[in-house]
Image 1 (cartoon, rainbow, N blue to C red):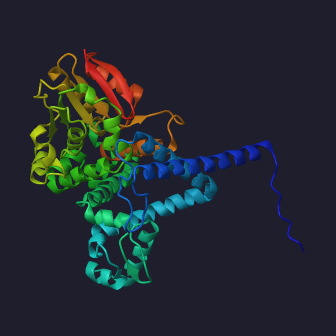
Image 2: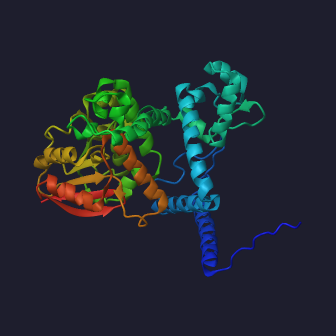
Image 3: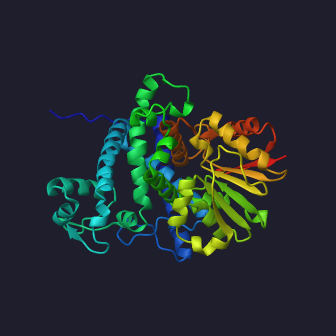
Length: 441
């Protein structure tokens, strides 16, 4: 008996979907061509995940056009892939892939697998297993899952070698590994604990404890930053993880700071980088804006101690214009003659009550005409931002929720927060990219 094959339904809706998908594919091809040709014109290598692949920041920091095209290309390509995957398979695959990517990444981090693979040569799975102290057959399965995520390569059966990603993890002063450690040792347990946090009302009055992190670590009286202060190694890892985030491109990168505000227009300005960690943003600011007089990096004393003991690359190049100062932003701001007070990824770490306290500590030190710059994600209504950028922002929002009971904010949220906290003494001036500018009246 012949099998009847259902015929496609020909209607306007299906035709419109077909046109939309084909136009999306054409758009992806056009954007890929623009990136490839843009790199060729500048004599730069093309992106590659192979062992001799391009650097993580293969598009120049200040090439805003190519950076934007890349973001749009990635957003469109993921939408096309998701659409053709289909609804049921998409949810199945997202969950399965996410869970077991975490499985293998935690093993990679715990056993520091990249350091057991020679930088420029292949090695047998058996030798890696022996070096790591792991059973060969299990490690082989783990490595082959990592390979499917472009971490390591198998140039011949039973041999493993570095890919661009694993080589980056090995050779980039461990900041990539520190980011992995932060995500798996702090963010992951907090994410799992968030459900119990929502199910059970808090047994305390502090908003910073009403989060998954407090559930995960069992510290009903200790916030994320309290625990960090008690464990200096966590603090150091967090600082290095932030260095990784700054250099990884996208919304967290220094290029977003540099290109979203006219820094050169400040002239011979004095900048205070409040909560500036180990100075990764300050160094790039001084490098790309030579007119700046000085940048003073403020952070907790233990962070500043680490910054001085383990200076990040290029500090020596700007040392005459760079200072470090131990400071807690819940205390009054001691520097009263700065032109700019920069808060990059500070306020999103705190619920409104605490964020207002930070702002109230800096406003009295600001003279009329000085500016307060906020560098944070800006949450847009659904559909008003490309899906990749929106997902990054919402991912950051979830990170703030589970670790700190804090949040990312919309433009309206930011204006209201700064206006209330400053008693109306800060005037909103502009918002571009992820940079918001407020001027002291």
